Image (cartoon, rainbow, N blue to C red; front, side):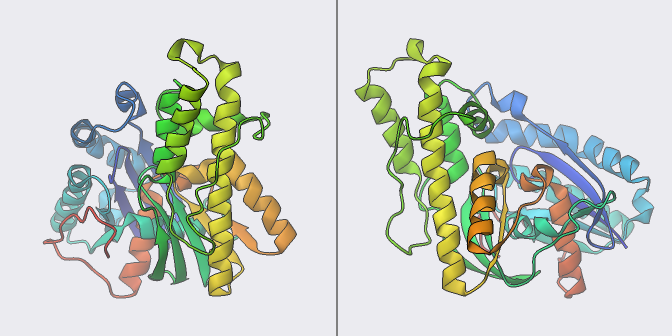
Length: 342
């Protein structure tokens, strides 16, 4: 069976076609970075308008790349939350219309739960063939969310902890703005930090307390601002030589917290399987530290290719197919859910 997935939870419009639940025939993503970079962050109204403009072309391109037509599709899955409610409604209502017109099963998907399943996606070229075993810990880390899940099967999980204030990706974006690096900030900080000693400028790790699986990244963002003020670093002083050690020190502190919480979660649930996903899971330092630690400590570490870490419709189609197999089908009265709730 072919499943069509649609994702529009934030600022990316995406559509994917999956065969037999996990083989990705196509996955198209239309980014809005060029729009929101002017404002240093996502403007919800602009995001919604862009989704309206792009949802039809993106779906058509996904079908074209997969070499199929809409009449070949057996089910349609769409993000129902969490995220920006205006953005979610564009993709969800489009999916409802297609499901109604073609008499297809409709499945509303929580896109954070879908992130936890992204490691199961397989490309036609065989990429992604090694997949995790249940149960596993999933770290979902992005611009809007930082969450730890204990995942027992494709449709069951336990929320272990999440961000109390700024998500990790949000902290990266805000620090990048302080350093004059623009938006999106995570990529810029990662690039600037490569080869730079993170010990040149050190920041306190926001652990909260030993064993605690909640996250708080607001304080470390403020610590960077305090460092700039204390050292009288103004906008005109923000050369690469000045800001690279700051960026590297910030990144190292944030990554250390994410790594430590993952280890604590695995210890708490007696599992040696770890999956990371979400936009910040593309961070090279996070992947490097977890990979090295997994070799040292003996746990299994899985990270989807970067194209499946950030918001994408392939993961939506995958989880939608799993939910449909479990008998979980949505009605046409399904509404957007901007919160994490299932």
